[in-house]
View (cartoon, rainbow, N blue to C red):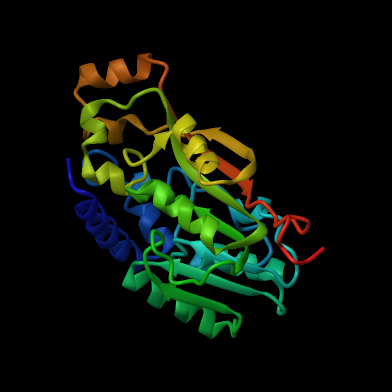
Amino acid sequence: MPTDQELKDLVREKYGNIALQDKDTNASSCCGASCCSDEVYNIMSEDYTQLEGYNADADLGLGCGLPTQFAKIQPGNVVIDLGSGAGNDAFIARAETGETGKVIGIDFTDAMISKARRNAEVRGFHNVEFRQGDIEQMPVSDNVADVIVSNCVLNLVPNKNGVFSEIFRVLKPGGHFSISDVVLTGNLPASLKEAAEMYAGCVSGASQKEVYLELIAQNGFQNITIQKEKAIIIPDDILEKYLTPEELAGFKSQQAGIFSITVYAEKPAENCCTPGSGCC
């Protein structure tokens, strides 16, 4: 099994290459088992085109939900987008927070940061900033964000607990997040879990749904709510790259599932009347 650093390097390389392509090129390269497995990056994506702030140049078709649609962003909010890619969710968040707000996108892939910055500059989005960094160690001070969004990114991070701890740190008291991610019910076949390519494609890096939600609770969040859930079906021509016919038949017959979920949770507000707080 690859180490955490090897997985991070794989993700950086894969998504750096994807950043150099547009959405149509990514989609047209999904030619099935006889050629490549790029389809896995696109089969989970949802349609953003009807959302205010959508920019086609920033949409690489890499998400698995629409977290900004559920994020309850208000005018003037500071919003952080984790794994901001080419800027798609950040620009939609900007449409919600307006000129008086601010959006910070964080990504650790050089090519994605460069593409997102170009997309922001040509549109004159001066209140959208893209910072290069690891979301396990965000380049952001404590208690900065009103809202955090992320779209199909945490499943790519080996240390998910570390990310939720960081989210708690950078959210303001009373702030919240809305995150779309891939989770599992039941067990993936060992050969699928060990396939590094499927990790970069968001599948083998996914956590069990119950474990994922428990990590959120353990990091101090409250009012945890699943805002949306949908089943993800991986086509057979992709699974056949990693599974024998017997393994594929067994996987399809068991009660295992791959799901996209959008999860909402809040950082508790400070209690003004806590003894010693000095604000009562």
